[in-house]
Amino acid sequence: RYYHWRGFLVRYIKSATQHDPAKPKVLLVHGFGASADQWRKTMAVLQQHYEVFAIDMLGFGHSEKPRLTFTQYTWESLLRDFVLEVVRGPYYVAGNSIGGYMAQSLAADTRDLCRGTILLNSAGRVFTPAEYVNVTASLGGTMEEATRGYAQPLPPYSAPPERLLQLFATGLYLYLKTQTPSICKRLYPTNGTAVEDGIIDCILRDSADPGAIGVIASGAKLPPQRSHNELIAKFGRPVLILQGLLDPLNNATARMEAFQRLGDLIETAPLPAGHCPHDELPTEVANEMVKFIQRTEAKPVVSSGAPPAARDARERAVGAGDSPLQRSVVDENILEDAEAALAKQVVK
Image (cartoon, rainbow, N blue to C red; front, top):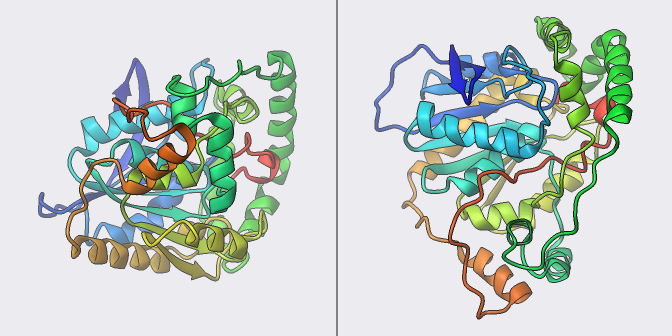
């Protein structure tokens, strides 16, 4: 299936099974360099319980790869419109790596519709509570407020020169063309055979499309980001951290513990998997997601107003007299430090 978005074709996969329309739906978001195909095995289990959508973000998978300046604003706007126009109705969103960050950003900005998020080895900054107080104080408010000009404006953003980015992206593409199989297997330490099920072919095929190099270059020029502290506080609803503890890209245990410190709305489920647990252990991941959704649906619905944690952070940093935001931010999710290890994170 294809969704026509602002003149571009965006591919998505929709489960074939029919369910009670009153039940929430589930949206799945891939990581940098991956596509909806990486979710197929998880979808096979999830669709027994819910209507499921998996999207190829613009510039990835089978979606168009136009000559654009890709930023988090592009992908956030796409996901928001997709939820409003295609998914429609209450939903849960799950995302892996950069897709996890985008999922939490989407949820924070559509919290009237989103009932919960599932983050699988998510990208995005996570500060300690003390660090976050200092960050908001230095900005004069939250990153959202600073970006939108509600607090102290951010300084002008200057990306690296375009020619340098193109050279970087071309070199990275040539490297990945030969190294993708070995990189993928390293990221699937428990079930290395999972990457032999067409995933490598999908990555190589998609990266050979016209325009793909420009998308790769975008990973090195992304503007400042909202932290998970800010996003989860704004969202104010349950979050499940599904963490592959064998992820070779970072200290996965420490990262899961950092999420746990963000409050009582955080649930965690450690898994014996690498960076892409949804593809490495799809049945286990799908079962954890179903249990989380069922637990959350059994609880009273949380008010969609700005959660106390978000108000408290704003008041500490800006002052209790400042008025709250009058509009939600559509365009301002981010990836983590331009994915500093982009060459290692092709299948995120």
